[in-house]
Structures are given as C-alpha cells and as structure tokens.
Image 1 (cartoon, rainbow, N blue to C red):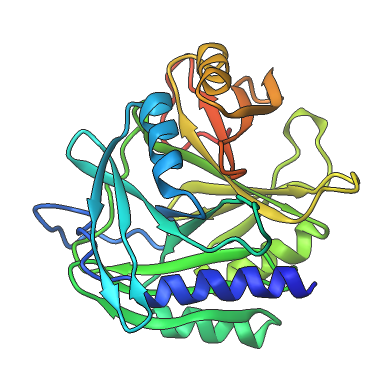
Image 2 (image 1 turned 120 degrees about the horizontal axis):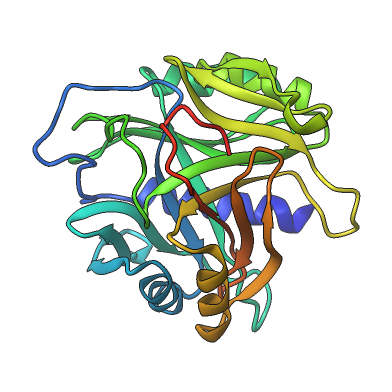
Length: 295
C-alpha cells in the first residue's frame, strides 16, 4: 500500500508541473463532449524508451518539450498522429532501484474540473492533482477512485476532439476493471456525468457501459481474481491488424499479456505491455463501425 500511495503521489507531482502543452485542437473549436476520453499521459521512468516503442508500434511522431520548474527539469514527449497530438510521455521516478514501471492515465472531458474532483472526494475518491489551469491546454485535475484507480479530468480550452470514427493510431476505447463494477459505474456517473447502462451482450454478467451524449464512452467489467490483478483503467488504440501489431510489439521490446482474441461483440483485440511495463490495449475495428459501437 505504501508503494501504491508513493506512485500516486509521484503522478500527482508530475501532473502539477505540466505546462506549455499543445492544445488539443488547432484551430480551436467550441465543442465539448462530456464523458469522452480526450487525452492520455504515460508516466514512466524512461520516456525515451517508451517514445521509441510507440513510434514503432503506432507510427506516432515524437516531439520533446523541455520544461523546468522549481524541482528541476521536466521534459515531456508529445506523441502525435500526423500533426494531431494524442498523448504525453512524462518522467516519473522509479520507486525501487532498477525498477522501470509505466502507467497510462486517461483524461475525460468535463465542464467543471473542480466540481468533478469534489464529486470524486465526496464519493470516497482522492485528489492527486488539484484543478490547475495550463497554458493552451485548459483546466486539468487527477484523482484516484475508491479502489485507487487513477483518472484525469480535463476542460480543454481549445475544444475536444470531434465525434469521429477513430483512425489507426487513435484512442478507440477505454475499459475499467473493478472489483465492484456496479458501484464503480455509479461513481463515474456522479463524477464525469456518464449514464451507467447494463451490458448483457454475449452473456457477460456484471458488465456496464458508460454513455453520454448518445455515445458509448467506456465499459466497466470485473477484474480477474489473479494474485497480480488490480483494478485499473485500460486504454485501447485502434490498429489496422491486431495480430501484426502484437507481433511488432514483441520485436520492439514489449510483451503480449493477452493474445489476440475476439470479444463477444465481434471485435479483435489484445493487451500489451510496453518496455517500461505500462499496459495498453489494441483493437481492430473490422468491419468498420460507427463511433457509437462498444468494443
């Protein structure tokens, strides 16, 4: 538990130091889609290794932003699909000697970050990074839910990415693994403003979908009973071919944690670990589906 708290505080410290981040949209728009996942940061002890991995895996382009605060230099690597930024890679110190461990943190669009953080704490969560205004980016905060799962909330000053079908290299889906999916769904309903809808497709029990604006945003399911399994958000990137991408991940120094498989809804997906230990999902949307689909 002490290691978990230290890790969360490390993420909070880095989140608080962020500045000079690029806008989500250029040119800016006035569109906001409450409950949509609109950004992700990877907190890792080795951002350079992670950047090489994701550039090779998804053809993401890396741009380094050199930043300095009172605690020293804090370089951030921005990963982009073409000219469109989709993720940030931020340095987080290792908790043990020779330890390299990364963690992806997604950010959900909300109209009022301070209100969302207050709702999280009122329902048993914990603020890791208070509401903070960031140049070009907007207002951002980070919290841990009642099970210690980390999520960010963001009110983008340049508007949110549009409601378009994700292309290969785009974030396509998010899934929360929880010990109590029903309670977790209600928690996020109150915090990020998504409705919790029962998902009984494929005979899966105790599974829910978070919905806002008529669009499915994420799923909530039961975490496995394995000794190393912990509640967590898992973010998925769309790829053209899951099998080829999984094989490429291994050649780039990553691992395949869950090999390519078909979900009960017909999508093909796999779960990977990058060279810094961060988990990430890949999903193949074939045949093409509308953005309202639920992997």
